Image (cartoon, rainbow, N blue to C red; front, side):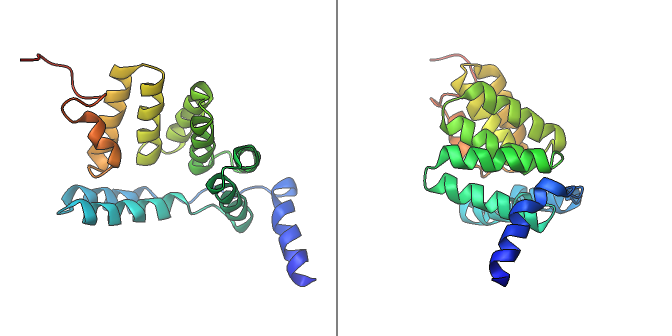
Length: 184
């Protein structure tokens, strides 16, 4: 019974509480960006990328964390409608938490609603301008909207902070975001 009461409290908390302001993680991320830039290889770079995700996925409070994790679990089993409801709730409860908007954008992207994905990615980046995952997600979204030059510029910005993103291959010779130049 106590466990049920705790769960109900956590689920209801966003309805009557104010989300705390997210902790400033810019210094922590700057250190990780530097580690990523200096990583010796792909494996080391991926380890740093995973550490970045741990920072972004740190919600402002327990109620927000539960909603974030529940939405991600739903997304992982392709319950996009359920995940979208959770991320809508998270964005409404914690309007200054960038990851809530980034996760909702990912659901829009998966549902091929690129215009809505772009709105949420822009919001996430207004809150956390160097959110590398939102930057790369924005590049992919712009690519889907056939806004190739913008997509390329956005991906370059993301790669400046994390050169090990898997999306880097989109900029390789012959890739869909490869720099335009003269063909031989």
